Image (cartoon, rainbow, N blue to C red):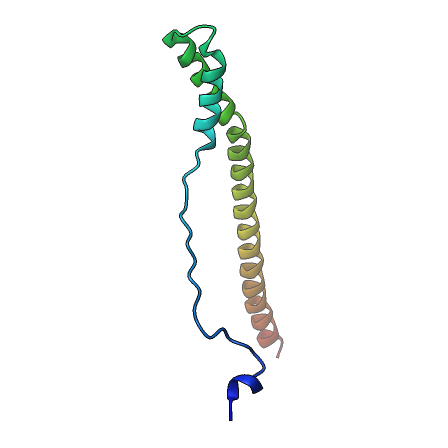
Length: 107
């Protein structure tokens, strides 16, 4: 009896090869190269290329300060929540201990 025909899940009889060659892509480098190519015809001085690179770096780092401040605020919020949760648990356990001593003293 051929069990392959009766199975619920069909499996391929042979394996397939997958040829994938990853490529490296640097978006920042490509944007910088486009800017340099754009201004190459106007002025070929080293100062202009340095200015374009500085401007590109400034644009890349512009949004990162906002991310850092949001991350810092998030971490502070997390610490405050953890401290509050620990304080509530401490109060509950100490309060239960006090309630227990109150009940024992009232007997």
